[in-house]
Image (cartoon, rainbow, N blue to C red; front, side, top):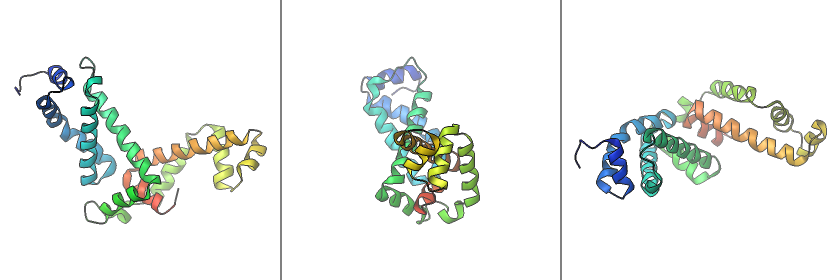
Length: 197
């Protein structure tokens, strides 16, 4: 594959199934994508796995790529979404979570206990609360912090039980995403393991 091909030409060829073009795109973006993911997860082997996942996805959906549009922005959007989904899945999938946490115990990264700072979690947690809509915050405080049932919160706030449940789901998702985005994967996963959320 000639090195004088433009990015657009490479994308056109990759879109048509040219594996050499795909390899060139992979080599071009792999280093920066790896660093981008590592900023979040701080686990080299996990970052490498996620990079491969993203490029596999790119190959699978190559026909949908528009060479006229900025590929870099498209690639980073897919990457960010994949990293978040992986970590959200890890929050509820014990096997996946244990696999990721095991990497923290093998010397592949700084030991989790050295990275987890409950003060940092408290800071991020309160920042997340401050960004919630008032009604959602009221529901969260009643149900999560005061231990009220959904029915009790619904009666106090004058809304339906289903509305309370929806607010709780959205509030927990928002807090999880916020802590992951600004605290990194080790804080996110270790706090889940310790049932701090």
